[in-house]
Length: 218
Length: 218
Image: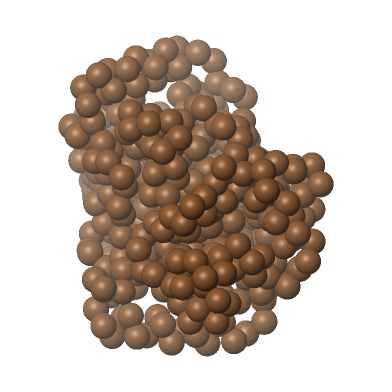
């Protein structure tokens, strides 16, 4: 199965590396990191890089396209870049699955792939997603025909395991889960707005809102 | 808090990026990706790269050192490289926490930091860890004084959340968990040898054993 993971400056590393690691561990996928221009891709933390091995012009089809998210407001750059939107549009015509992680669903919305459809996003991006004509829902992994959106950051791991299960069956998905020892045991149970303390949810919501009003880092 | 994440060719990306993302999301850590020589670092899948922004000579202290793991037998290269072992030894003299993810604990053992101590590793590396004089245990996160080892691949996320809790308190750890929406919902419950089907555990164990007998990819 051919997987294309789109990279762009200001991306959240785990949004991309979570799904990459799952597909890679299946031993049945060819994964390509693709960006407008190949080379180093600056992370949203400004503390490191990923690397795009391919440019858009070098990858024109895939079975699965993954559009990762980023720290707000770095999605503004790809959302306002016609070349990026056109590449996603062209890729989508070839895919079995077009997917996003975190606020990557904003970019799929900007492409026009989520109009009137249900999708999820990061907890800080629900209003923006709605303003783009998409119907936000807070499930962890949301499937609408061939479009699959995942919630914030770490949810791309669950989404990719689900895609592996749909495409290759339950045993392969379980095998990948075992190889990655994905038997989560976080010290607390605060990983969603429904579970975290209210004050924390409000504080982080406010911080994300303030970030969203700034300019992208690149 | 200063975090140094050691990279080397043949590494497993998620072993490094899981902890990176947790420390980064705390907004209270400076994270540096460090390798023997800076530049692109080949992943164990041969399908991509991470990037070391610093060489060993440029980073000589940290509050937390993270030594990630890799697909067998890529640990052989750092385990047999005196410069790498010496760098870890020197770094450990400066750290509050010296940590590993997955079979990164084999490298800490080779340094001599785990002699007679309890540690965990990837499900495929228990025998090798024992042969190095360490006492293997299958907990997800194992603390021995200031040395913390985590189980396979994805467990580095849990370990880093735990370190954040110890160093910065429960609320910061919960806040990071919320920002990363780490509310895992894998489609199956097969993430540890105790939970996965026996046939799968045996098959993957055999595959890892065969891999361990090969030569490193670089």
